[in-house]
Amino acid sequence: MTTPTRDPAPHPSRPAGGPSVETRAALAWAHGARFLTTATQLDQLPPGDLPEFAFVGRSNAGKSTAINALAQRRQLAFASKTPGRTQHINLFALGPKDEPDAYLADLPGYGYATVERTAKLRWQQVMADYLKIRRNLAGVVLLVDSRLGFTPLDRQLLEFVAPRVTTGEVKLLVLLTKADKLSKREQAAALQGAQDSLADLATEAADVGILLFSAPKRQGLDDLAETVHSWIHRA
Ligand code: GDP
Image (tube, rainbow, N blue to C red; front, side):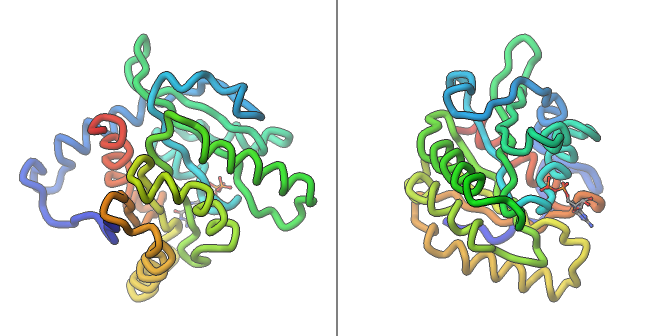
């Protein structure tokens, strides 16, 4: 089922003006994210012994900013921007220090206009392999610039993972980033556009959500934390 927006209504366990117990637990869990390892190929990743969720998106969509906001760390995801490391998969651990319970995978950003053909083909291979083969993949957070909407590369990426999303094996959350740059009317149009783009994935079994997201305004941040937390802890 496609969930266009998360329920904005007051939650029974949400005290007036404050986050709910669930949100606080989810945020505390996300704040514990720490860098684990980096890999250029799938077989360099640790075995899928823990459930994993992946952040994917066009370069400049706001992926590093969203990961840093989620983890409440200024620099956590920016290591992946170091020249020469942009094609890497960076893995972070979450959960208790001595007993991690999940991995967060930061996948290479795509869509640099200047990237040459061989690099593009390599990107396709890494993403396709990861999204199709990674057994412990519980969910994908796809970041889409709310002003641009879905690009052909975003659609291609969705195609790689679609078979696992339609069966419900892999959950999907689309973050429409930089929502602070849009008017209310434009935000509504962006939501509608995303919903249309995801229509093919909306089966009974599928778990697909869309969120307007703004890092500076913290819009959508609680819902992002709750969603990824629930993927791991309410599987
Ligand atoms: P990445 O390449 O996908 O990791 O993108 P970054 O996280 O580096 O963000 C790209 C640019 O967009 C940076 O200049 C960020 O400051 C900016 N940015 C990211 N998220 C937001 C947002 O929610 N609102 C606004 N206004 N700018 C953002």
